[in-house]
Length: 485
Image: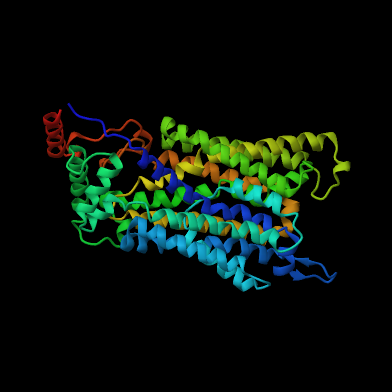
């Protein structure tokens, strides 16, 4: 009889600790609040003819978007050379240095931008716990000096230091260890994570599986960047799918709400401060990720993306149409709002919150899950780097686009949501025709699925052939298990 692989508590704790690294992206919430803090505006803004300081749209644009200009591509080099653990250590340190440069800035816009760029290099693909950042700013914005913005920005160093400290206690990836000839260390890590001796059949079987896959992947020599777009195993399709999913994900509309939701809500007659508005959106984002853990595995990747795109598209369309036809012009005093304005405002607010919730339940996490399970080890760091770069280029483009037309935003109003509606419709079509289901498949099985040429819309329920399972490995593992029973 064969044995199930045990789940050890330490393996679960290590996974939870790695997930904590997502707090890096907390910056997306921090900077939106800093842009409206008086002391931040005074230190990094320009003095107007009336003696009042302000942040021009161009300055807001570069401050917000420079973080996204950080290098996702360069992380692939350290992942190959230093391993997964060493790469995380290196970029955590880079991120922490970038935050320190930002926090120590005094009146120097260049230093602030340099710090944000360096932090962006380290933050890479990690997306954020925006709720925490909004809560911190809700308390700090009442401080009448630079602590109002230094505190929320500086707290990012805490996350970097925690990750730096914890990574010293985490093991290296067994795949990387085997790929670099360190088989003894790989066996030790596998045994430790599974809570069994190094000579256990489970360890022997996993090592043989990984060795088989690694040797097959390395037959063609060292992987190059161009290989990510080769026809072998349909790598070009897989890389393009990763790039497109990440690009579409960032243009679902959620980033627009995060940065400009206060403008929407104010014109809708919410009567709330921008900090409270952003805290509400942050809370919705946080709690939206909880059911996502269930939906991704129950629905599968395709269904989660398809349902998410269609539901968000409906929300965006309602916000655009209802907002355009019922909301009062931007700047209208709350006392002057009519019953029609308030009713329309309530609808706009409701569906804006729904859209943010649906995003974090579907596209937010699912696109990252898909990116991580789509590529063979040989090109995985490089292909993931392409997808990650796309996820950073998209918000950079969004910020530049929106802020370049900031002066016209009041006239366009909620109709700007039609841009995101169009992107969501495109996303639905792209997923339906290009994204196969990868639920429950190993990296090697994903290889076989792409080689089989099965159309993505028929991929749900696809199963690998017997030859994929390497019978010589599994028969030996089963035999050893029987002998040990």
